[in-house]
Image 1 (cartoon, rainbow, N blue to C red):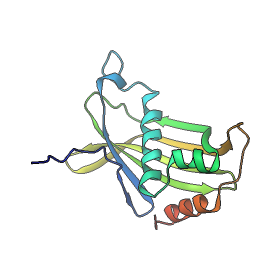
Image 2 (image 1 turned 30 degrees about the horizontal axis):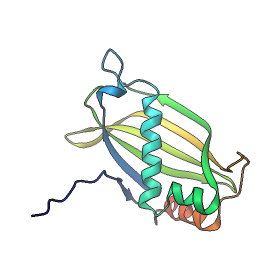
Image 3 (image 1 turned 90 degrees about the horizontal axis):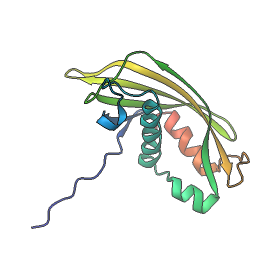
Length: 156
């Protein structure tokens, strides 16, 4: 009998919002079992990557086919409440704006409770730029930009 191997979750799209579940592990906390502030940015990065994945976009393909990568231009993060060891969280990601060589995403990290998604504990606005291997800004290829437009319009 062949057992099915569990795979990591990529989360799922719900309209124009991607939901990515995660749990807080010991390595992401400080001595007080509170999530270390930089871990929120890692949670957001994972969620953005998985949002791309469920919409048919792949970082490796972008690098190998187009020679392009996303770089963080700026990030504004607001900590509203502290997450703790073993908390279940959900990262909500939506595309807020698209430019020729950039995009802005809104990400909210929420606690998950018995009644579903709870209060936001962190809000992140992140601006990404697309750059070539030399770090020079480039325009988003049409197919990639169109995918992000579909995501923004809830048709991802």
